[in-house]
Length: 224
Image 1 (cartoon, rainbow, N blue to C red):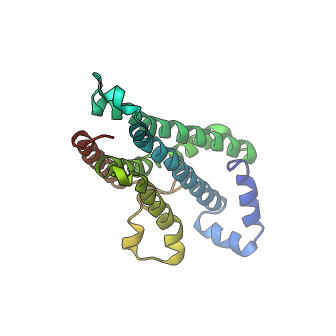
Image 2: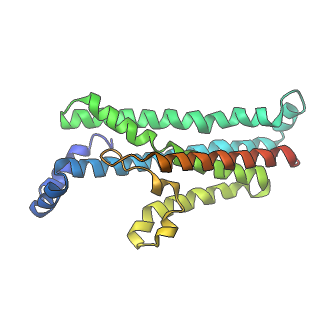
Image 3: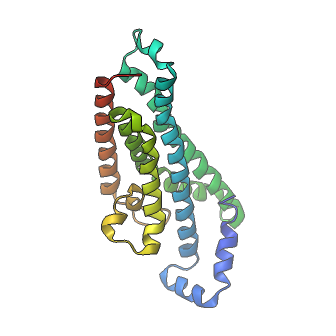
């Protein structure tokens, strides 16, 4: 649906002569289209982050219900048990974002009539670049579970802060220091924008450190 209405969005802005003149100076038709596609890619990333947090907090549900105890009482270690759960927020999110990008790109290409191959490739890049921020959101939820299990549900707080800062921060003209709290604010604006590896690398590194601290806490604390 999002990809299919791309033509309508471009045509709507194009009917405004003053806006069209402005956009012609900064990139013309592609300027409107890329801004729209970049925004929906961010939406896809945030929705996928919901799934990631839910998948992480599934471990807490297994622990509280008592289903984890007989599993961990055998030969399965805590880290192996956690790794089985973490495959879903790690690989499942990549699959979801790839599916969303491919579907949106296909619909966009058909709607605009410019060929589907390039459109699918552009949207795949725009959606998959959301992964580092999605993974960091999941890692924050995991840290809550591993270090402060009674407050594991607070993992949703991190997600809420990231989303509110990314969406409302620019509108409210919040200080840059506040905007920097959300990993989604540091991602490249694709398609159309420049790609810098540094933000993606440090977000990924922060995710790895947060995950390591969470798993270390999970190994040491009491379960139940």
